[in-house]
Length: 205
Length: 205
Image 1 (cartoon, each protein chain N blue to C red):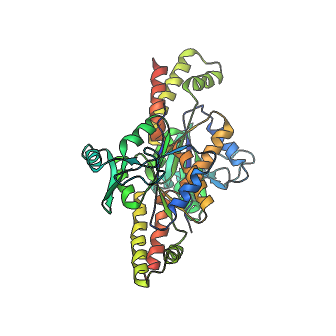
Image 2: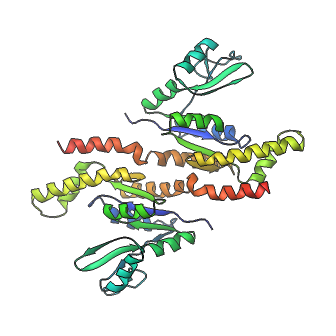
């Protein structure tokens, strides 16, 4: 059974990660398993455990942290949110590709524990466009916007930690680039070598 | 000017590198510059200097070696053959992709000097198929064939030094995979980062 590919889509705030992810999952020819987060917050109406989130209590979440099962986690307004390793491991081992959409801080934590993934950084076509998007979001004052732009700049510098940079100039183009990356990742020697070593050993018997 | 990508196609003897290269260059939508070798052998009828080869005398070739301009070279039946670095460097600097088809020994020499290339290892679909191809070549005795298979096995182990492995199950499929690799290589962060760093510095002024 050939191991699946872990695909991590990340990038600065406001770049459009969610939009690209949604468009990607609407493609008829992809079959990625979406990485399900674990959280201690209450399920909302219609949310299903093991589909939308793994819903656990604080005690269970902290046991997962202690056991080293959280690839990354954070606490927001009194609730834990994080990415459990076991779900990703099992899915990859069953030969399925796993897709994880995550912020820059989270992605870098995940990379430390699973460096074999394909780390994709979604970038704005240019920083001016990013600024417009950040400004366009609301009615915040210029100082707040400047601070957001500075934060985005420093996030873009984090690009150096990633394998690929995909420009989000048009959603459908970004989606196609991500599909190409996953196709080509399957050709990378570090993914293929074990299979060939086994084949050679067979022939030399 | 964005630097071109150096694409190195290599692989064990008999795997079909030349066939794949020819089919690739017949594709209407590729625009690779073929890396021209340097040699001391005499031009044959119709061969053009700077097109088929760079034809030089022994003295000139040895000056290139001394000057560190040969990415790799070898001597066959009294003549030098090799890959001059300056031609590749200039072509990449002008924004064009360079394609180099070369045996395993040569590819590994080139990689030491230009590790930023995309190193593609063409593999047989399975070693049995490779054996059939080696056998099918001529009327050599079984011992020679066994020796060739052993040599091919050890070359396949060299795959670990490459970035990508492309199976040559069907020429057109192999060609498509190589085209995908080149497309995706352009998205690799190490190729894109300098451009973004410049953009950020511009915005922060």
